Image (cartoon, helix red, strand yellow):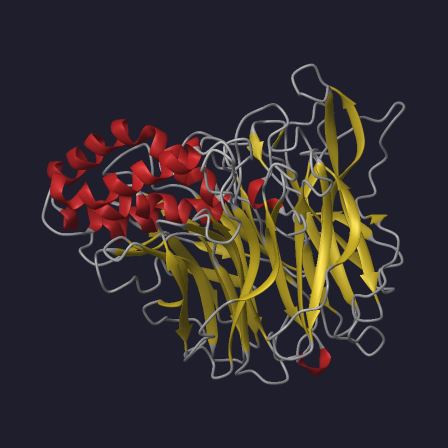
Length: 590
């Protein structure tokens, strides 16, 4: 099987393991290792956590596999492994938390209220905190809100995000666990009100734990997806929930895809809707299969992991999903391709119902963990089959290949959008991060640190041919100008053809620590981009504050949305800010 890489397994150049999107890992990890166990399973105290003990043991076995331990597992998988390593310490703390007070007292002590404020115009944004946090049960979790996804249809807009406050409330609430929070706007994204947690799973042994993706089909119908975990049946997958009232409420999530948690790790889910046929939904995700049934075993009898981008589809608005996922691309991480992986998928639907899936491939030349590429494939039969992948661009790893300065887990993951305007209808756009410049660094295995820039390319013939990548951030670098990081781009394009790309940016700190939110806008089809600053003040990186997430987690992605009804022009950007001392979600319409 030929090696394709992506970002679910990227190796850390300095030697630390890392992997899937932190958000997706957060989801599985907490559910898997007792956080959702506190919420439920059978019995009280120790018996409620017993089911997760065996899962922690399985993850230790996965990490010890010589075919997987050399690969960096960041994101969902990274959070899982981080929790499994600390399980013996965290487990008694969770028992103490549960025993100290009643679940109702703890849940009510974690109250959240607030607004996200947005503003029209590129320079008019004044961010406000999304929630007011009352730290009653513990000072060590419940205050992380980041990794955002948003959708906008008409007057209604919804921002979903990872939320450890939701996680604490639901895990102690008697039903299933949810690590998702959301906010809603009913005035076209000008202001948002925090809705706390969407309806969690009905059963205490089930959880939706991070990596939210959200789309809307019309003014009323919104859908979000997130990582699903079922400890009773040893299942992992992706669940989808629906709102029929414009995002005010959501149904309990139901699995769209399920696999065995004993043999697979799933993360990085993304949803898309066909605007021309709003009942057609597409869900893409990254899957690590470590059963050995696909890629076989090595000479020592160890399973060879398979890394794949897979897709399921629904043609009835999420009522039913494909019986079996379609494999868009896959690679075996065998001795000839030990660093190969496929991760960070994106999905979008173009004119004629053509489905596009893009991802980052890693370890593309076999033995080099830093050799990466952005790839794309398309389907002309509603996701039943996909074309041979096209390489859009080769990628130079940012930071040390796993983290950037400030000990932030980061990536080069793509953002995908399809043109909707009169002049750019059907044009396929991609944005991603790339180390355009590298500086010497004594503590990386290559001796270099990749300074992140945001890159952009487009295709006018259905993703077959691509323009040369261009740098989107316009800050001067080199000579008397410092090198700084611009990372984690999110992109979309509206009915007028305007292209918006938003990203985190350190250009205003010569030492490359403090972070701003910048957006870049093109009104000439991507020929040029004008950059503007969104944040009034820059903020530091914040990692290692919340016990429920990996120590280097600061969110893995954000999104930019446009009006799905096609009525209004403009874009809504959601992101996380550390200005107030903890991660809070913000929004900006421009």
